[in-house]
Length: 292
Ligand code: SPD
Image (tube, rainbow, N blue to C red; front, side, top):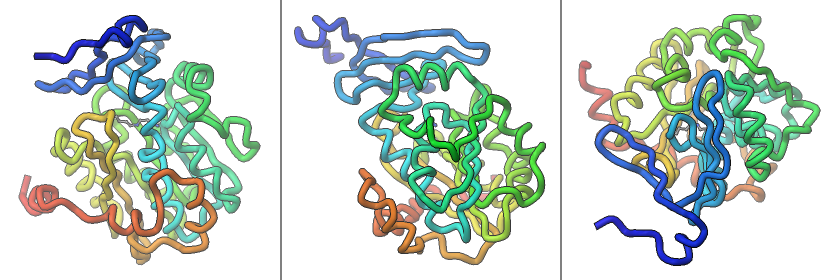
């Protein structure tokens, strides 16, 4: 039997809010405090009982105040601590501002360009999720509203040291951000020693998409290494990121000075977490060995 909201939550008008993914539901008890249909998607802000305020796009959980730091740290910091240089950083997506916040914690970063397709997401998150996007006023940040794939094609070759792909799920407007064509474009605009890291979906609930993205990156980069972290609000709870580079740097060995510069402010990330996160589950290894 479904657990029902108790009197405390019922009085606050809290109901079950679920992301329906294929034949399963992933939910939290909460109350919708804002909803808008943008040109691209439905944007919903929910006050949850367990995780603070959260953002859903087209009914899919994107971020929540009390577990966003794990996601944003693990998307950004393994790339930022292993790239040769981190002067110029490109973030594709990431309209809640959590990823650029992580980037701009590094004093070495000179310029961070964020390209988000849906300007309404940025506006809504600035208004409703100010604890996530805390770096909007940083003068090194250049926010551009537009299609990330088109932006990549418009860049000069070797323009960025790090690219972080913080797209939504591989359905709808973000599907292109999982394609080999897109990753080929990213390779063109990365400098020697540069690193790309993309959110890679759930290794369990979205196993095919996850493995497909690893393969797509492998078509273009000499080294591809998935890494994993728990993000409780996402389908399956286990989440992935895919690190790739043409450099010979070991993805498991971060530069200690860069880690030291940011580690005290991290909720999850540290040098040991970094190394351990690159352990690849057997199910993913087996899928990568298979033909399809
Ligand atoms: N299923 C959720 C996938 C989330 C990817 N990015 C979310 C944006 C967080 N900055």
